[in-house]
Length: 144
Image (tube, rainbow, N blue to C red; front, side):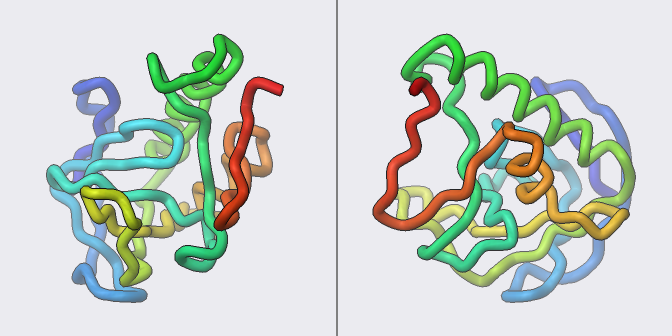
């Protein structure tokens, strides 16, 4: 069973299957939306890949709270987080581990989240203007 949380409030229970290896589904007993491009599965932070290629392309959502560089970024970050939660509540998502880990200290798994209608969650956020494509060696400025 998987519970989806945002801000610590249970929202839905659904099922996922598989094991945490490249290309396989990730099984989560609890799923927390951290922000527009990060989820927490059973205590493990995971970064959305958005259908991209690890270390070459991916998805980047605006930063929240004090990490935001302007009020616009902070507001958009809240919208991205809320929309990701909404997408995950729409039905049983399939979380697919790419097998790659990000290069941060926490070594977060890079995952794709496939929605019941076949769309990938990161791609939806990008198409709605709530996230942008991340590319290696390119910075994203949400404030200009």
